[in-house]
Amino acid sequence: MIDSSILLKAYRLMLASKFMAATYEANRTVCQYVHSTSLGHQAIQLATAFQLKPVDIVSPYYRDESLLMGLGFEPYELMLQLLAKADDPFSGGRSYYSHPSSLDAEKPLILHQSSATGMQAIPATGAAHGVTLMDKIMAETHPRKGACVICSLGDASMTEGEVSEALQVAALYQLPILFLVQDNGWGISVTAAEARSMNAVEFAKGFNGIHAENIDGTDFVKCYDRVGEILGHMRHNPGPVLLRATVPLLGHHTSGVRREFYRSSEELMAAEKDDPVAKLYQYLLAEKITDELQLDALSSETRLWIEESFAKARAAAEPNPATVSQHVFAPTTILSESGKRQPEGASIIPMVDAGLFAIREIMEGHPEAIFFGQDVGKRLGGVFREAATLGERFGEHRVFNTAIQEAYIVGSTAGMSAVGLKPIVEIQFADYIYPALNQLVTELSKSCYLSMGKFPIQAVIRIPCGAYGGGGPYHSGSIESTLLSIKGIKVAYPSNAADLKGLMKAAFYDPNPVVMLEHKGLYWSKVPGTESAKRPEPSRDYVLPLGKG
Image (cartoon, rainbow, N blue to C red; front, side):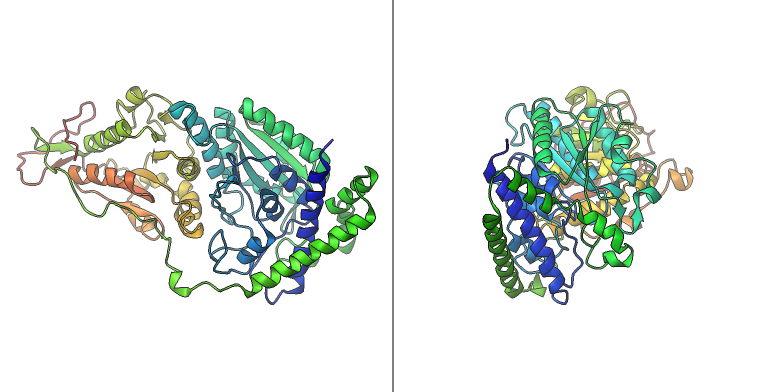
């Protein structure tokens, strides 16, 4: 039996979400920014939120306002973001409603949440991957020991290809992540029958190693008990779970796409029969936990709470336009060059060797540094041998291969960085950055800005470009003009070995995402101040002794 205080708290917060939605509707000229609410979804969201610990990590989606209140955020705080106010605790007025990010030590860590449907699946899985790697690197000492990751999704997002990449990795590594899919049967005006040949559970069962099941997401008691069982098991036996909660969509898709545009009155009336607020009301009475008079009093108190919160939020200060450019980048301490540019005993240094030794020295001094990508593991060490010997030296938990998943390679760094790792990753050829561009633009480049500096992403993304010279548009391309148009990332393009080594180290210490373009037409580089009689053959199997510069 669930403690009565938990049941009454859930009912109060369900009422709060209902009164919030009504308040926003009554003040549409004030609530001018597009927003979604959690009407119909409250039971599963609160049941999940109540089970979480500060050590856990959450990646919500834009309809998760009840989940946020269940974690302890006040309606007033959510309203500050709704109205784009200066004191919005998540983004300082930079984001739409219910796009949270939090480092509150008393609550689960909440990764920066973008608006792009389903894109949070990769950063969230990256966080779970990071927790698992930290178990191997730091054993009992890392701060997220025993964490579970919750990735909340709408059912329509399950058709996104990047969700498939996340599920594949979660299954492969048996990560401690719960994919909470809230299935209301709609993707704006598109029905499930129009968009999908299977539901989320049927889809997830195609990934060997993911446990998937359905639940009535409108029944708070069943949801609370089952989510508790799942998370309790996951804390001791890590492995991915997909829980599909069927719920009604009682509100609008968003305030801008209203339900009456595409739904019939008959369909809406049918959906109302599954209202989780009404179901919990009946349960409280049937179990004699309270009576109608007490519930009426609670309703009146909650309504007043929401009215006062909205009035306070409405009167709050607007953002100062002078702050609009803050947090595009996190401050870095690397502002000038230092170290030796000319190593002892060598006048010509292959650039591939300079990069290799830079990463080796980084990894020797920083156990939180990891390196992954396609074919970079110890068996090959990179198709250009730029990772040769690293896998053997540092082990498969720090240098490892990935599948052909450019989106995951790049996007997972957001979650890994958030849990304390410092990833260095590689896209095998520059021309194949485009499958990862969504994560680079949507997640990495905006995370620091939209979280007000809480979640800068410390990641180095190595991209070989110009390979072979005659490789055409799929192996020899130069993509710098595309990357330079993305605000929020840094691009480094060294022209000699000394610069490559120095920039690689500077990029590692920079708290922002840095793309390192490495031109594979430049196999060698003359050290400044020396002369070279001829170009040497490209090095693949040996490393010249570089200094620590």
